[in-house]
Amino acid sequence: MDWIVYDATISGWEKEHRGGIDPRAWFRKSSRPYTGVALRLWPRLGKEAAFTSVNVDRLPPHLAKRCSKLDRNAAIPEWEKRDSFPILLATSSGRPSNELADPYEMRDEFFGLSCDLDQLTDFARKWGRWDSNNLAISQSERIGVLDKKETPCIFPHWIQHEQAKFRNALCAAQEQQKQWLSHPERTILIVQRSQKPYFFVTADSLTTLESCRGAIAATITLDHLSRSQFRTCSRDKCKRPFKLESEHDRKYCTRRCAHAEAQRAYRESAKPEKARKDRRAR
Image (cartoon, rainbow, N blue to C red; front, side, top):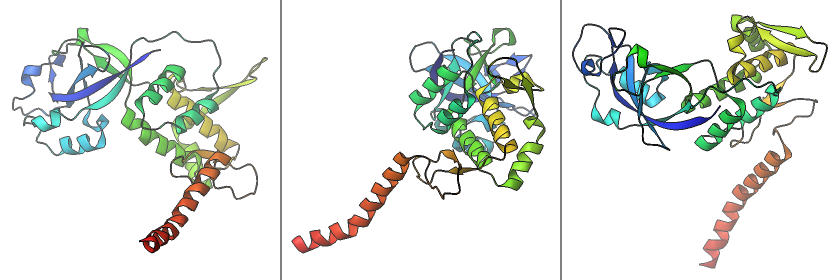
């Protein structure tokens, strides 16, 4: 499965119109509420634009907040339209692979993702779709039902939100672990096999596990069932969860993070002394 980065800009309010979306009605006053916003998508590598629509709550937080305060019967200001944000779209659905992938390795890479779009794109190409959500993409600005193509998508701004959510869930206290396990979506079934791997996990809805998001949630459920304890790395630039395997009071996930933090602390402590020497030299 390959992915392309698009820059999305708001082009107006989305309005239901005879089974599709009529762009001519975006800026007309109407007693019917608008269901979301229409987006124009420009590929960073390519010239052909695409069109789609999303609910306001799927926009980046700063845009969602501003749009939620606008009158739904009024036109969206021009300065809102110029504020773009990235979206990853799959260029092909890809064929299911028979190769077994390690969900714990994928989870570790997920927690290591930064705001870098190239890094997120490489992650998606390696591991596949993030969740079961699709965007209805059209090549025409008049988005009709027959013209829509359901396309897997990834919203980068949501990835950071999901990182914080899963990090808190993995490093949760015992009472919070019980709340996680009691949620209906956390129900899994462990099936035994006659060959390696001898156990694999299924769920009531297979779509919940056929994605990175579902696989990560399943690993957290298994860790809570085994009563494993995790802690977040104390290094601000890392924040990766790591498993506590002894009673030793570890603060960092690796020696590399511990060394980097020690160097940072040394540089911070050396600043006052350096400043005093500079003043004396003057």
